[in-house]
Image (cartoon, rainbow, N blue to C red; front, side, top):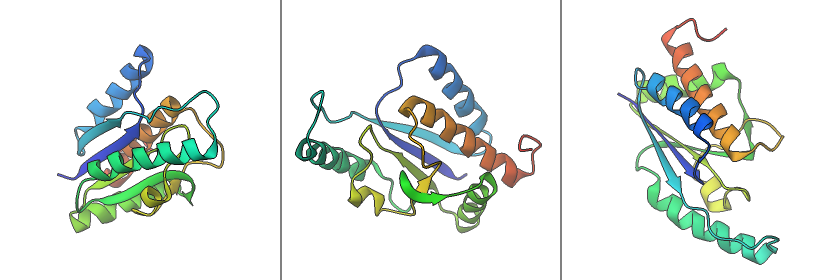
Length: 158
């Protein structure tokens, strides 16, 4: 069975949102071994300068690099990435399944991802807009589920 890992900088605390995320985790069990790895964000002052942001990204980078599973197809989620339709994302899952490769998505913190993390694989962008981390994580889980249902020919995707 394919494994899907989501590495996310930050932790979700809102109970209602955790309930929604847990629902997708439960649904995904039918399609994959699904894992979420949460990384503690590097501490930053209220109004950080560029040097402080760079230092924080470097600190998060080190932790992320340690957590990326070996041999996985890696998709950093960043605004500079390629925009995909749900069907195109499903195709990536299909290709991964046929090649026996598992998938890792990486969600950065409020200041994004370091260039080194972005270079780990093909970047994917959901939009040119900026979304709150907690909302984006839910959107990602839903799109992962949608991709599997498309691949499996289920009626969920309309």
